[in-house]
Amino acid sequence: MPVHGQVKIRTSAEQKAARERERAEKLQLYLTEYESILNNRQLTDLFALLKQTENTLINHPDCFTLWNIRREVILKLDNDKQKEYLQKELQITQLCLKSNVKSYSCWNQRQWCLKQLKENFDLNLYQNELQLCQKFLEIDERNFHCWAYRYYLLEHLCPSSSSDIETFYDNELTFLRSTIGHNLSNYSAWHYRSKYLDKLLEHNPIRRSNLLLKEWELVLNAVYTDCSDQAAWFYLRWLLFKQLGVESITETEHIKPLEELDEIESENKWCMLALCQLWKEKKINDDKRRNYLERLANHIDTDRAAFYRDQI
Image 1 (cartoon, rainbow, N blue to C red):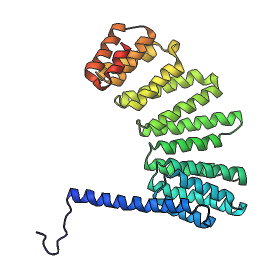
Image 2 (cartoon, rainbow, N blue to C red):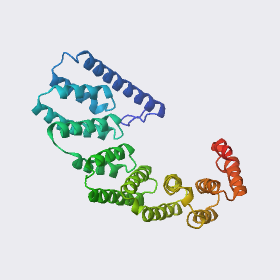
Image 3 (cartoon, rainbow, N blue to C red):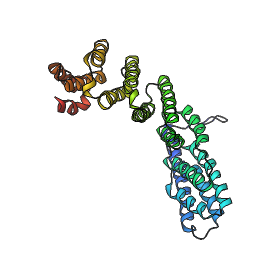
Image 4 (cartoon, rainbow, N blue to C red):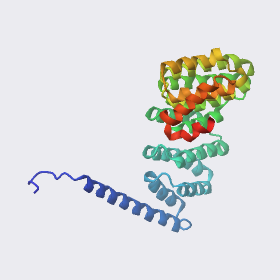
């Protein structure tokens, strides 16, 4: 029996029901707004349509159709208004990203706006957008949507002169190294490091030997620091098998350090898997390789047993 003046504490079932009712109400409101926009798409004043779609997208930023409607409307405006609303669109998408920072639609809309502003009004805002990326990466440094957007920006900021390009790639690799140093689990930082290392090696092959040596030191230090983190192991295998190549892998420089780590961190599946791949490619330690794959399949990582057995 409730006591007078005392707030009733909802049970978990009541809380769940309340949340479901709230979601249902929000969904119904969204569907009503969405249907209204589609029905009046050709009848409504352009500016009213922009306002209506904006109000809906603030709470539901993932609707591609509404963003496409906004693109159609903006392109129908005269030049002055088009420029004004393209810049305003950057503000609107930023608000939408606050409600869902991983919205594909919002990030795509920003790319479209930047493209229109550059091509139609010679207004280059790509450099400014890097500051926005920095803010979002400070919130979530592993937000791959933001990392992809940053890569898109840098592709448009890449200089044309040969000497400047090399400095540009070096600067980005330095930035990525500091990001990885802060968080070894940052898949996106490792991924984009591989892309820019590729670009730098292609641009200046003379630096290949020195760069790959430093890269090996970086990733080896990463797996020794936290051998249970898989991000660095993916990069390590990419570096060995895609960049160095089997013919350049040596037992002393590349295999022995991992064998020593395997002794320190017994039954670490990532180290064992890397060694199995190396032993197979170099045609050494075949019995030990089979033993490791059987242990991985039968005891250490049974969820992927078929994968390991397939390699035996």
